Length: 193
Image 1 (cartoon, rainbow, N blue to C red):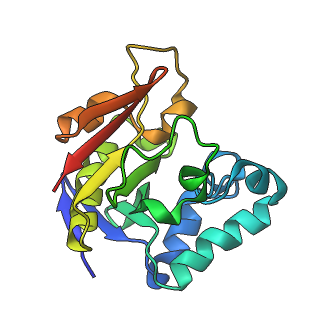
Image 2 (cartoon, one colour; image 1 turned 120 degrees about the vertical axis):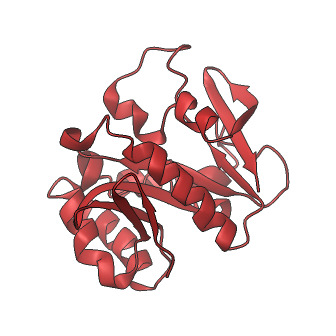
């Protein structure tokens, strides 16, 4: 198991022994409005048809099978943040032929950092930055050569704090990602490892 320590944070993969920590972090609302970080795992119609219990079961199934669908950040043993990361092929919404914004840039196999969840009381403390750095190292340790993201460009559009679940462009730029394409106001950023 890989663990990273950054700015008084411990960051570790969401493995079966950390399942309860993830449940505690996501709380009764399943992170964002009972999404359970499954928005990217399912195509639109399937996501809409899946009740919150099914979404929770989908994410927990990945954790229980040891697929480590993301990373958990801890401060003093308490979970304070989450970042989803995995091979692009894991995410049905990215692979859909109807995907406009999130269509593949090319045929290169990539990993994607696509979701952050940091409870309100822990925001603004560098947790997303530390999670993104750890996600890149996590992907690289598993053979990834390219890591992508679809962050929000705060200078190009109005946004709410809930829309920042994909991260901000400035955070990805600071981590060494470069913009390689843009659909509307949504950039596609990449980092080659």
